[in-house]
Length: 412
Image 1 (tube, rainbow, N blue to C red):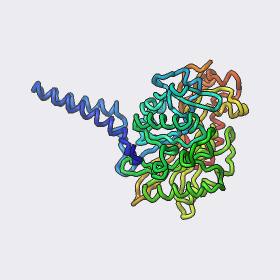
Image 2: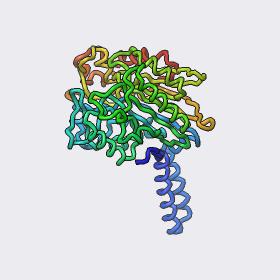
Image 3: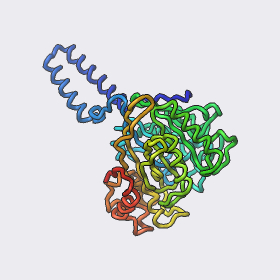
Image 4: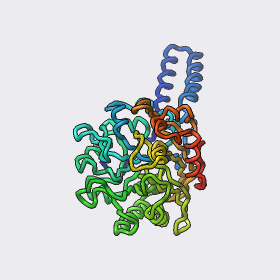
């Protein structure tokens, strides 16, 4: 597949469908010669379009795009056993106002999706999810995923190949792990409303070793010789794009504290001119901020957005606080406005905290925006039977404590 992935805009698909229905209806009415019927039909269709197709009202102007970024998609046993090879139903329905009404959604795919032939697994830190995951992501308006993470090689090269095949079959863009050195050296793009976005994806390591140094983008630590390659990737993306988003799989799991790689590399990435940094891996939310680069540029940085999909209570290696916060993540949105040749402004960022809800022995899966989560739901969550901390009030306090000093709006 060509490295320059030109992703069709979801809004245009919805509007096009509505217009086809409108034209067909008008033609039918004209055939019957009922002029009044035409007028009534058109008026009715326009009213219906306003009620049913909200995205048409919110159409962004050319050279402006609303972007959504998310945390880790971690498909563990509880989730895979609940949904099997089927669809996800209404699991993400409450995120639709964000995912379906934006222009482009980016997530970190934390697991191979190589399918049953390579053995499904969602435990013991070695994962593989159903091939149908790609379609489920596409059905939920996720258009692009990063693959540079510690689970990229959990099913070896064959698993990566099948993962990429499944993503390509659904026209989901991807970068961070590769099938050839030429693919690794090329810049991965998405064209969104006339804005070319270059995406760079790197990880601190992989759990299973890669067969070559070009297979997965690995930086190892803040001072390794691989950092020069990372910076070169950013420079290439910047030279060929209007906007550069750098996705970093970094940090220490189960803590709000940033580690050295996060603090050192985030500033270097800002100095290199990246517009946005999206961090993942800690399996909890961490702080967000605006960084100032060496040239006075501003870089929006989310150090960790936690989990988008997770399904484990009493997570080992975590204390009670972070067993609870394992179920809390965030999505973030911002607007890109093209201001010149290969130049954008990042405007109106907001953070939408979410709760991954499930009950009993992994039933009733649903993602809720935290603003819509209730104490009644918190009481029903599987984690609550093991932790009295897991209350709506406590979750609100934790989220506000993490993001309070970010200077970024929180949807509450």
